[in-house]
Length: 71
Picture (tube, rainbow, N blue to C red):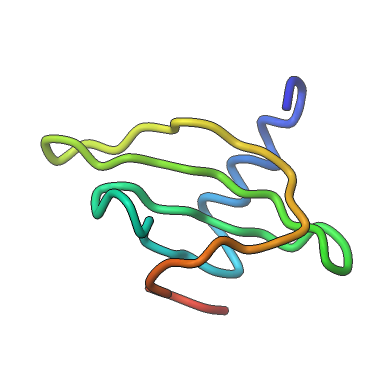
């Protein structure tokens, strides 16, 4: 995702969907549609009141998990 910092920031600030991880309740998946059936996923973890970015990746499928918010 080198050079895609603006896209990652947009995914975090204006997501199309936010889900909570099924395996870790402190991990959240932010999805932003890039083109039909292609999303950018940004994964964050909340720890001690702070949040930090774990990773980002393009995907063609939204993972299962509790839906917290949808556009």
